[in-house]
Length: 198
Ligand SMILES: C[S@@+](CC[C@H](N)C(=O)[O-])C[C@H]1O[C@@H](n2cnc3c(N)ncnc32)[C@H](O)[C@@H]1O
Image (cartoon, rainbow, N blue to C red; front, side, top):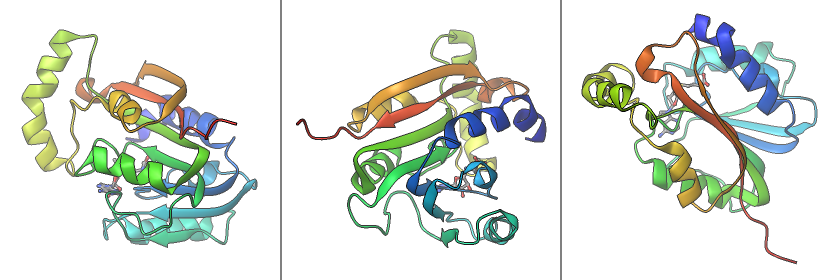
């Protein structure tokens, strides 16, 4: 993945994450690729990661990061161990392709966000505008899921985010440059949990 990081992901992570402030929850942090992009305006940073193989590297990255206070939790997105309306922002990058239940995960993310809070996402998705590529994604997905940690190739994550009650503030679709052709279609952006009117 390092060529994909260099080609586009590092810039996309930086662009979306540097603006965040307040209490932030990151879901499925993996080995902590996002940690260096959070600014000092983030007053509390909680990261979750359910894969025990990732945790040592994540802990090490957290230790080496500028922040001494990263809270690391071993939990899944389908059941988040936080009270309602606990966070100003929730971050998922390359995670909603792999979770067991994206709809339930987004319900949980919606629940733990404060009204007006932001879901910030970078996800690879189904090739909706390329029938040939979508056909390949469908063909490859059963094997890919098996070898790549339950990573799905044909999820329409942007639709699922909207269906979970988020209002999309900005969204971009772009190719994940240097990625394998079947993981290239991507969507990234900011969606908000609506604040009550008035
Ligand atoms: C491709 S990695 C992405 C890691 C990191 N977010 C990044 O941007 O590099 C997918 C991550 O999702 C995590 N994951 C898979 N299922 C999950 C779930 N149900 N809840 C939370 N995280 C999950 C995996 O353990 C893995 O760390």
